[in-house]
Image (cartoon, rainbow over all chains, first blue to last red; front, side, top):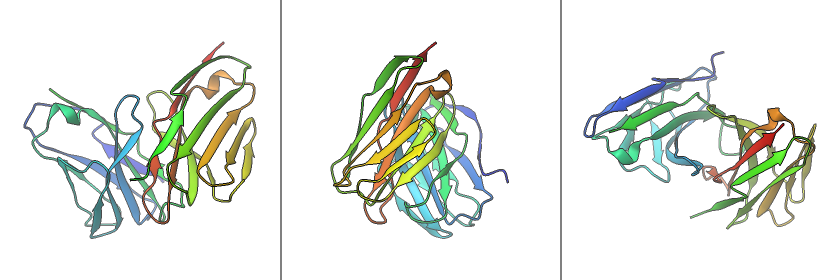
Length: 113
Length: 110
């Protein structure tokens, strides 16, 4: 099993550009999450999904969109990138509600200039 | 909303010294999880605590969950250079998503 995979590993965007961060898991997990990690700020939840077709906002959803058409994939869309979205983005998945450990992908380092 | 606070933010220790990080929640937690993130890496799950007063050990690591289920600690005995990284606690109430603390970055001086 590859676990949770994310692409790309690195990306530089210009202000106003858009992009999609890809996340795929092969563990048949129902729950998937997107976090952003800023230096010294821990992990902040952007969006999460409890199953295909169901998504919900986390703590910091503004400027982002998600979709969940399959169990395996949970892409994160950035529209009109802003410097404040410069961060490391982690995708994670687990079997169920928060009582189960989360498996994290390797992350995408995004810079918006 | 729920907040999870973690202290200290940084800790520098000599190899062989002990290390402790503390986690406090503004609300009673259903469970608490601990993760480790190596420099440049991603968070990796260490353990989960669910019972009031629970204590779990993993080799040199000891995890505690407070009696009121609002605080937790991670203690490392005789640190090694392999312990370097950031340790995060994360908790939730009911079925709400996990809330992560800001983490404690541990440096170990050989």
